Image 1 (cartoon, rainbow, N blue to C red):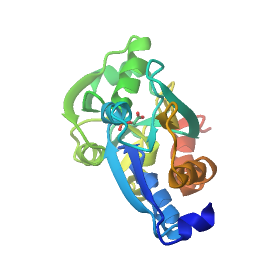
Image 2: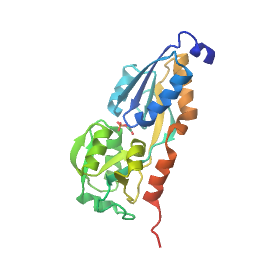
Image 3: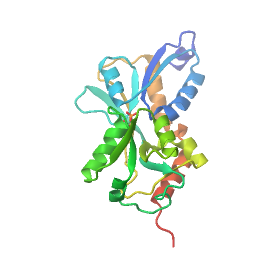
Image 4: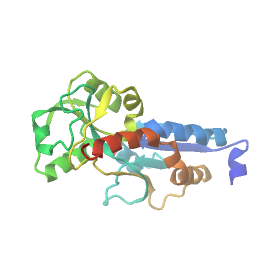
Length: 234
Ligand code: PGA
């Protein structure tokens, strides 16, 4: 199979990913394409609602997204943790504070993702279950815009830690140490039930299952989460 994929016609692969996945997803794709340079790839980046639509319309071979719904006929498997964290600009009064109670966040402005985003619905569900109302002062439909908005002081935000590598390294935004955080989610590899995956799609799915973890900048993430959940110092 591998020899076949490396041959003259590598086939065509359509992958659709959640907007939060593409940060490490592109690194993953780059390595896959180095191994199979003949494969022609279409890589679509959209939000949860868009991904479910693509599955419904049978437009993608493989989808990488948050928890799929139970009521759509899909086959799926978790392949990586996806912690959602609360971020603030460096120098924010809550930065460096330990164990911030959720109730304290009610006084803050939040930049939220658009309706249809999985990150948004997970955050809303999480706060709703805990009886806390967040004020969404602004809506933005990309993680990049949200991060910049946070840096500029437009509000706080809840994002997947995987969107943050560069900002954490540069110290422009900080992960707040909030009680009950991070919100624990996972990423899933998904396709329609009964879909006959092509050789290249099967190879890509195996590659994601076995190697996705190694394309995540775990050192940066662990430092951020470690800082965010460390016990108060002496
Ligand atoms: P989103 O997807 O880009 O729609 O927020 C990510 C997720 O579902 O966790």
